[in-house]
Structure formats: structure tokens, C-alpha cells
Length: 226
Ligand SMILES: Nc1ncnc2c1ncn2[C@@H]1O[C@H](COP(=O)(O)OP(=O)(O)O)[C@@H](O)[C@H]1O
Ligand SMILES: O=c1ccn([C@@H]2O[C@H](COP(=O)(O)OP(=O)(O)O)[C@@H](O)[C@H]2O)c(=O)[nH]1
Image 1: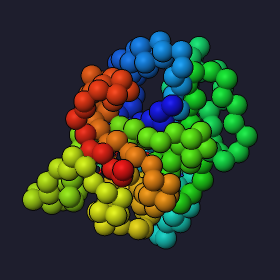
Image 2: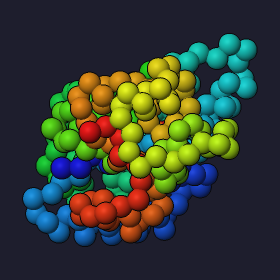
Image 3: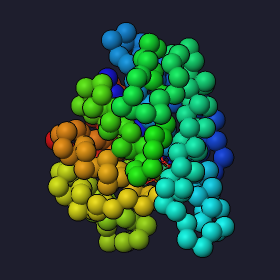
């Protein structure tokens, strides 16, 4: 079973990318033609999460980090409900909010969203991988590879094919900031390292590449961990 963490920037960069969602659904349908496969899909908050968090920050002199996170969580839940309904009948269980709670997984795809403050949906994806015994989280976002530093801030940053958890922790740091754009969040990184999970980071818009990842074929991206 794959756990896929679908970055909000792919699904809802600003407006909802319905043509992306339609193509992504086709990829999942193809993958699930193999009756032994199931997929857990964790949905991020994207543009709306950042916009609503920014609005809140502009309205208060000392913004509360948990309040910002709750606003982001609600954006992930709205996005996830759209995905769940769009994937019916492959997905017939309610959207998962608490990855450690009671979970009904009777369909072929389980859709999950944000849980509680302190991290991003990357951590929820790690908890779900732990819960279902998956060894790989596919992290689809707006970057094709992880770089040695944020390429938007450091023009000398170079892309990585593979990176150990130890090295990756040095890149993303240890501190959580609501709404922060990172290839994989620091809290999720800590837990994934403890579990010895493998994370594949790849460009979510490249659907051929996503198909290759799910098929176990050669792909373009970064392997984090073992
Ligand atoms: N070391 C790094 N390598 C690649 N991207 C990085 C790095 N550090 C920070 N980033 C930023 O992380 C962003 C990807 O995260 P994010 O926008 O949150 O994706 P998503 O919403 O798809 O999950 C990139 O746009 C990039 O600017
Ligand atoms: O379990 C969760 C999931 C999300 N968030 C908040 O919701 C925002 C949007 O989620 P995420 O960063 O995963 O979305 P993406 O980066 O994919 O757009 C995060 O920045 C957090 O502020 C949270 O607090 N707890």
C-alpha cells in the first residue's frame, strides 16, 4: 500500500485545478486495477490555507500559532472532502482527521486531511504509514527534487537524487512554522526517520512520473531515507 501526500499547491495552487484532479483520478484508477492495491491519500491546504492564515495574521497584533494551524487544517479538510467525493466510488469511507483514531477503510482509497496543530499533513501521512504498515510515503508537491537548500532563497542550491534522514534533517531544521513551505516538515521528518520510512519526493504535476512511481518503475525525484 502506498501513502500519497498530495501537496495543496498541486491541487489548489490558487484556484482548484480540476483538470489535474481528473487526470490524477485516472492514474489512481489505473493503479487500482491491481486488486491487491489500496491507496491512502493525504490532502494539503494549498493556496487557501496560506491566504486564510495570512488574513488572520493581518487582523491581530500577536497571531497565535495554534490558531494559524487550525485555519490551515480547515483548508485541508475542505480540499480533502472535494477529493473524496470526486473519487467515489473508489473511496467510500469518511475523510480521516485523526490518523491515530478509529479508521474505517472499506474502499480502495482512503482520503485524509489535517489533524491538529503543530505540524503539516506530511506528519499525518507518516502516522498513516505507521498505522497501515506502509514503508513508503510518496510526497507530491511543487518541486521535482529536494535541493541542498531552498532554491527560491539560495541560487547555489543543488538537487539531490538521494538523501539520508540525517542530512535531510539538517536541511529542513527542527522547528515547525505554520504554513511553512518545505519539501517535508520537520516534525514528520523526525518521526519518519525513527520509523525508517522511505519518502519519495516528486513533482505532483508530472502525472507520467507519478504513474511510474506507483508502478515501481524508474522515476524522477528524490529518495529520502533508506
Ligand atoms: N531544500 C529544499 N528543496 C526544495 N524545496 C525547498 C527546500 N526548502 C524549502 N523548499 C520550498 O518548499 C516548497 C515546497 O513545499 P510546499 O509549497 O509546501 O509544497 P506543497 O504545498 O506542494 O506540499 C518549494 O516551493 C520550495 O520553495
Ligand atoms: O495535521 C495538520 C495538518 C495541517 N496543519 C496546518 O494546515 C496547513 C496546511 O497544511 P499543509 O502544510 O500540509 O498543506 P500544503 O503544504 O500541502 O499546502 C499547515 O501549514 C498547518 O498550519 C496542521 O496544523 N495540522
